[in-house]
Length: 566
Image 1 (cartoon, rainbow, N blue to C red):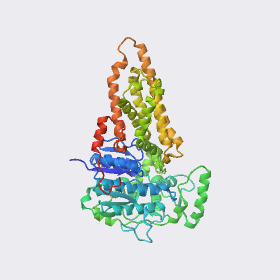
Image 2: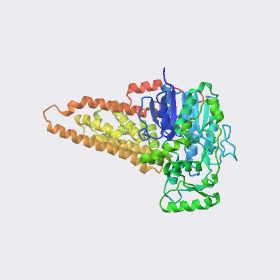
Image 3: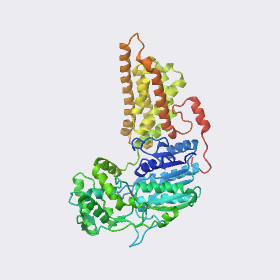
Image 4: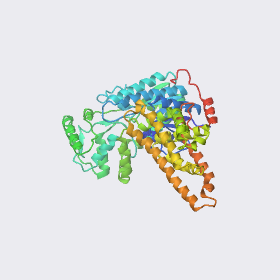
């Protein structure tokens, strides 16, 4: 029986990585992320196809959509991708990723006719309930800050699209792992368990509280929801959270008891005093060269509690959170990780404090992909130009079909190297290609010259792109350095093979012996890179394909269903 197909956005993020790992044995997964699979430290798996794309870029996503459809489509989409930071300031990424990106994914879901679309929202988008009241599944996400507004807009989009396919909105509690990986909790623990002067300071009465959910429990809930799809309504909202909430003081006491064997009496700072003290403290930290995590806006939530009643979710999904994964019982595991694996603890948690918005390498790769035919045509024109007869004399003897394929492969490799940030991809191919060109009489200057022409034609496209305005240095880093590394590899390979021939003159050379294996390695590399790029190629783009492969591609291109955004 074929595995159901699941698209996961935000696959390189904290939750996405855990979800991919948990779901990969039972689902065929398309993992969509802005980071590469190696950068995200997600292991290769036969059931996981990694798609490095920005969901806010419709041109890229449209190409991805066509190719997923051509491969049989998808059954479910778990839309986890989103932007959030703790500055409390507005940021273009709230609209670009959280609203525009969500609309794009909903269009993709409509076009693919998915069986259910699951949207990751947040309990933090809801206002703090007054007094002892609790928020629940019917509470509107009307908290008055920018992230909440973007999630509210996302939920409204999901509700609109639910008339075409079933949708579920899941509002997450604060998500943590056994390494913590939740920025506020990480900051609190680092402070409370230190010898710093503010190690015992708690704001207000220490009663500020939010609900927590373990990332393993959250992933289990999301997959449980997918498995129960036939029983669920076309649209519903769920709370991914235990009931209630956990206060700072409870966490402070638990952490102290585990670390010191006793509870150090906290110093409670009234809200009014904190309003004056926090800006002064942050100023001192900045003068010392440290960026404080605490922001002035956090003071307004002193002693407020985001209490939750998730009983309707438990009843509707027949789900119960595992007590042993509650934050109160899991905190000792976190602190043990902190003690026994301090380097990994630090690296994982520092990563949660960093928010990368637009990734320039994806913009550059997108521009290369969209202008690939133009780039290839320009490179060929330069190479066959009679004025370059001496410089490219061997290339000019190649037939145009072979030359077109060769330049297509180089352009394809450059695109993949830029997208993944792995400059060695093109260099590895040139290392394999150089001995063959050596045997054919090509000089290293001629082979490297083709890379120089490719660089110039690529830069013509990139400098004309309004999306890359002001990014000339970044473009240089990703493109020029990649091609320079490849050219240097050609020189190194030529030196090696020339030396080998000189010492084996008149005998069967190492070149002749190793050529079949070398050809196989080149073919394997070409196939690997083609697969890496295939999801980003609009139908009909060359991308280094043979004529037969291009005809097959055009014949299998599908037309979007009516109403799809094409």
